[in-house]
Length: 483
Image 1 (cartoon, one colour):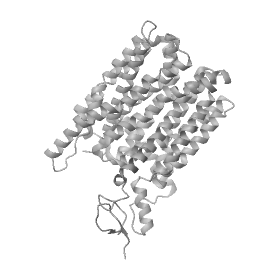
Image 2 (image 1 turned 45 degrees about the vertical axis):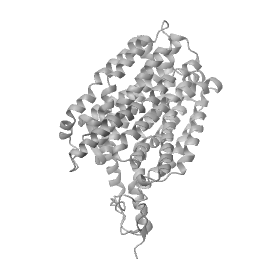
Image 3 (image 1 turned 90 degrees about the horizontal axis):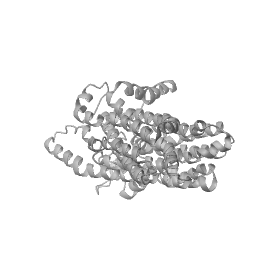
Image 4 (image 1 turned 45 degrees about the horizontal axis):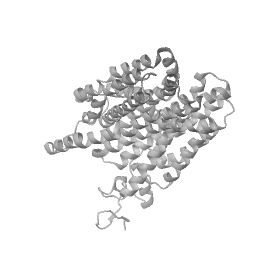
């Protein structure tokens, strides 16, 4: 007699004949049918861990001077552990992605987070700059799955119609971790020394890890495989590849294909370049902003840390306009389109770009405002407010263009496009801090930031290009798209 599973719509249990797909729209093991309480708890847990992963990158920046003094190394070498951590974040999905296919997203995070903590502990006890660089790289490598899995988990919980709202918060929270890091790190260094930046990461990691234990797996393939094993029925199709073929498949989908898309797909190239620049700009400010307020306003270590409140405020505020735009512009147009096209014709992914079109020219304008108001004759609150505005505008561009790319390539190639995006973002963020101080010392805050503003201005038309030519670009792609 077939075993049964209860469906959460009040009807009688249905027999489990196979586990190739969900048992209808109300399947209780479908993450989108979890209770609101469980979905909220799980979303907060995984986003908090992503916050800690990016917090771990930037909190170190407050201790750079302490590293120079203790190890007697150059400034560039002392900044290198920050860049190597972000490089680890770029390469981490190469470990996390194939493991998710075999043991699930939750299991990957439960395994890699303790390893992240171990290498963070090693960073705190490092006797020299070499061991510090090595430990920081591997800490970033094992922190990365928490960041990449967070977006996938949110998608598991959320129907496409509401994805812009949840992803607006997701894109903001990890960046919030990056700007909160120097704020917290400054107080830790001021009171205890640079090694306490690493101990602080450990405290946050433990606080984020405990709630994660009580979440449930959300990866559909793994859930169905476990159901098939439990009821001894046919499961979802999967390839039993020999080890060598599995390695080839992994390299093709996680490395070669993202790189191929990065250089051959105009949508991926432009989105990755634009979002990578915005991400690199964030990490450049993490290194350069304290110098600006020390040099022009004579801020001490505490004041330099508090100067990050502008970036923190801008990041925290960014989801608000994105949610408003989604609610009052995107959703009504989607509803009207569905009414006019009941046959199910896809709603163009370029409609995700409204927020980016609002903010793409605002962002370089805010950078120019910061560039020419950061001077002793103008109150320090003015450039901080311009930094706040620049950060809000950056996320308002960053989130929609990435959603546009994900919606364009859909479930089949969206992961590869996202992989290209993550590699480019953290490659930019690894490089920008290395030349930040040299740029600002050579040109001064005015022209250094103006150069960055002009670069941003050159990319500002990209969302408008996608909105106008998105369908034509999708028609020329070598990969299957949502059309």
